[in-house]
Structures are given as structure tokens and as C-alpha cells.
Image 1 (tube, helix red, strand yellow):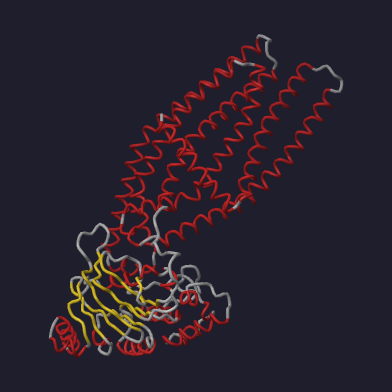
Image 2: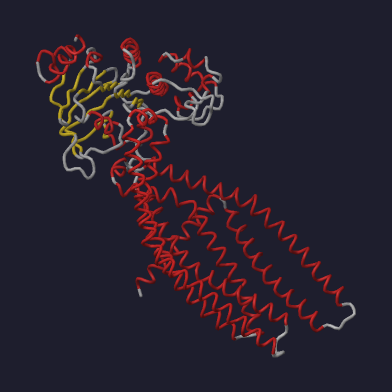
Length: 601
């Protein structure tokens, strides 16, 4: 009993939550849709009463003005229906689609905001992606679904009240037949809902695998790989087909039961309709019932059955909504870092120190970083080097506050990194990731990462950044200059940049931030030797008075930094200047000698 009460409370709470989102984003939408639903149900019942009156009047009437009276009644009903039809279509075709889009926009924005705040550690969990996927797919649809269910419930109550009164007065026995049919339908609806939800849950994983395969085929950056490696096409096709076959099996698994339940429900409805027709026809033949009553009762009983079914089905629907809303709530419950929106503001980073920092990724037993100690001050340039998988990029993620150290402490300007408000802290950092990204936005938006809308100061920042990285002349030759869209995904006039040019654009993004901590993760991997040399000289100029961290495999580029930290298997095994490390003849010496030998060869 307690479980039932708790489930009921949870259903009400979840559905109310979604209604609160709709009310917050578009308050008038709730009242407007309720008004339309109630008006529609009242008009439906009114049409029944008028039809009964007209048919019975024609059957019994002997008035010389019978046709005139019927004509006037029909004309009035026609005008009322005409006005109702106009109001309904105006709201359904214009107002509701606009409101629905507004709600969807705000719901998706809410999810995007949440996704940008959630701790990175959750992205290492497969379960998180299932929850995230369900939340993205279902949130706005479920919000609208909850409102539709509420509309159905309210309009059904209005209709049922009028129809029950009509049937109870004219033919009470029909009410019993209708109730029996409704109870069977309710039982079948509950079973159908449970199986549909189970099917949806089991379908998530193969559906995501299918979408991933399609995503790889769709993206421009994968086009070359797909054409060069024909086996990749076959591999992706196999994965797509395997996932599709899994879904087909699920359809077969659940389809049989759903067919059975639906068939029982349909047969019960047909049996009710046939029973009522036979019963009422018998009464008309026996002159016990008028034809108008026959027509009205037949239609009323069908409408009553439908309305009661809708009313009762609204509760399983609310239960179904609640199940999906649980996914939304679970996603929204993922915690952002404790210092997201809270903590000290910071305007500049002058000193960073890592003390005995260790870290391991969630669900990973082995430590990726072990007792890391390093420091950097404003105006200093340090380099972090090591073989692939040594932990260099993970160290960068800790410096950015994307992950929290498992042990040890990261201090910034003498305070723990977590004591600073996260967004304020990250505003002080400019970074070029190894897997830098550009987006199908304008060049200016790709550099500033926000709309500039013709703002002169923003335009000057973009131009300065382009000049710094050497892209100014190329961009100014484009038809729309800095407002030219990158890629041709949304515009045939979009600019297509080479890998080196895209990397320069990523560097321009770091330049435009005017940060105090600059992190360069393989900043010149796509540049030719001459461009690479020029770019590193510019980076050295850019890093004046900044804390600069450089991660690079090309050791000749970091000879002049203040300190080099060598990481091997997650530990700092050496550090010092280039000259000091070469004299020690350790791992750095071997790496540098090997690279120099290969280049000379």
C-alpha cells in the first residue's frame, strides 16, 4: 500500500515538475491549451443535444413552421461552429506551434547549460550517455506530453459530466456497458504502457550505436578516411546493421505482446459498439425510443466510452511520463563542480603550483598521474614532454579544473584551485587543445566564441588576432571577411581552411582571450617547418608576462623555455633547463638525441 502511495506521489511530483517548466518558459500556453480543450469538449456535447432535438422534432413535429425553426437552429449552430473552428485553427496553427517552439528552445537551452556544467568525470560513464541521450530526446516532448495529458483529463471530465447526465436520463443501462468496456481498456493500456517503456529502454543502446555510425558517415572530416579505408565503410555498415538487427529483435520480442493486448482492447470496443447498436435498434423497432434518441445515445455512448478511456488512460500516461521524467531529473541531478558559480573571483593568474598531485580516471584502477610536483610563475615558460600516454594531456585537464586531483593540491596564487569561482578562473586561461575544434560559425564567432553583432571593439580584437597568426590577408579576401562562415555545412559560400590554417585559427582564439595562463597542447602539429618556427616565435612573444605551459613532441621548439618537465608513466622523472637535462643524459637526452638523429637522417 505504501509503495502504491509513494508511486502515486512520485507520478504527481514528476508531472507537476514538467508543468512548472512550461509555466516558467511560456505561462499562457497552459491556460490557452486548457481553454481549447474544454471548448472543444463542450462544443461536441452541444452538437449532440442539438442533433437530438432536431431529429426528434422532425419525427414528432406537426408545426407549419417546422422547417423554419429547424433552419434557424441549424444556422445558429453553423455560425457557432464556424466561430469555434476559426478560433481553434488560429490557436492550433499559429499560437500553439509558436509556444511549443519556445518551450522546446528553453528546454534544450536548459539541458545545454546543464551539460556544460557537469563534471567531466561523468562523461567517462556509459550510463551517463544513456541518461543524457534520453533527456535530450524526451525532455521537451515529455513536457508537452504532460500538458496534453492534463488537457485530456480536464476536457474529459467536462464531457463525461454532460454525457453521463444525458445517458442516465435516457438509457441508464448503456452506462454499465460503457464502464465494462472502459475497465478492460484500462487494463490493456496499463500493460501496453509498461511494455512500451521496457522496449524504449532496451532500444537506447543499439539506437545510439546506429546514430554514431550515421554521424561518422555524415561528418566532412571523416570523408577521406571512408574513401581511403574501404574496410571502415564495411565496419561501420556492419555495426549499423548489427544495431538495427538488435532493434528488429526487440520489435519482435515486444511486438507479439503488444499485438495481443491491442487486439483484446479493439475487440472489446467493437463488442460494446455492437451491443449498444442492437439494444437501441430493438427499442426503436418496439417504438420505445425515438430516432433522435437512438442517434444521440449511440454517439453519446461511443463518446462516453472514448472520454472515460481517455480519462483513465491519462493516469497510465502520467505514469509513462513520470518514467521518462526520471531520466530528465537524473540528468539534471548530476552535480557540477562545487566551485561552479561560487568561490573567489580571480582576475589574473600569477603563480601555479602542483604539490604531490595524483589522479586516476573514474572506473580506472591505475593512476594516470602520480605525485606530480611542478610550478610556474608569471613571465615563465615551462614545457611538459613525454611519450604518448604519459599523462601530459591529463595534467592539462587538471590545470583547467576539468577534473579534480585525487590526492595532493593544485594552488593558484597561493590558494587551492577549488576556492576560485570556476568560470572566473577559466576566463584567465587561453588554451589550444591538441584536438582543437572549429565550428560551422563565422570566423569571428570561432575566434571570440560569442556573437559580435557588428561591435567595433570585438571586430578589432578579431582582426588583431588574425594578424598575429598570419591569417588576416586570407580572411579579408573572402566575400564576407571575418563574417564568412567556416565549412560549407550551412552555406555554399563558406570558407574551407587547411589543417594548418585551422590550427592558426585556434591559436587566434587563445590570443583574443588576452589570458594570464596560456596552455599550448601541441600548438604547431599541422604547420610546415617554416610556419612552425614563425608560430613558436610569436607564441614566445604572446607569452610575455604570462604563465605559459607548452606540451610538445618536437623538442627542438622548447629548448629556450625556463624549465622542462619530463613525464613518464604518470610521474615527473626529470626537470630542468634544456642544457641541464642534456647533461644528465636521462630520458630527455635520449628523446632529443633520437629526434635530432631522425631529422638529420
